[in-house]
Image (cartoon, rainbow, N blue to C red; front, side, top):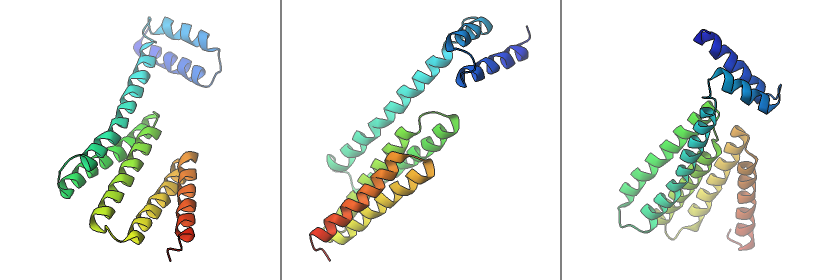
Length: 176
C-alpha cells in the first residue's frame, strides 16, 4: 500500500479513536495493523513530553536559589529571571499550539514573575509597603487576565482570591 494512503488511514483511525467513534481497543488494533506495530510510539512521545513538562517545575527551585541563597547582584538575578520568564512564555504558546499540557509552564511562569516582582520591590523599596501591595495586586490582576484568556479556572480563582485577601488585609490593618 502507498505511504500516502497509509497515512490517511492512520490519521482517520486516530480521529476515530480521539472522538470515540470506535471502541479504543479496535482503534489500537487497526493502528497496530496499519503502522506495522509502531502505533505505540505515539503514546511514548506523549509521556516523554509530560516528563519534559515536569522538568519545567525545576525552574521554581532554580529561581528561589538564585534569589534567596546566592550573593549575585540584582542585575544578574534579573537577567536570569527574565530569561526564565521568556522561556516560560515561549513554552506556553508552543505547548498550547501543539496541544500539549500548557498549564505547567503557565503556572511556573506566573510564580517566577511573582517571585521576581516581590524581590525587586523589596530590594528597591524596602520600607514602602504600599508599593509591595500594588505589585501583589498587579500580579493578581495578571492571574485574572491569564485565567480569562487561557480559560483556566484555577488562575481566575487565584486572581480573585488574591485581590479579595489583599483588600481584606489592607482594610483590616487600617493601612489607609
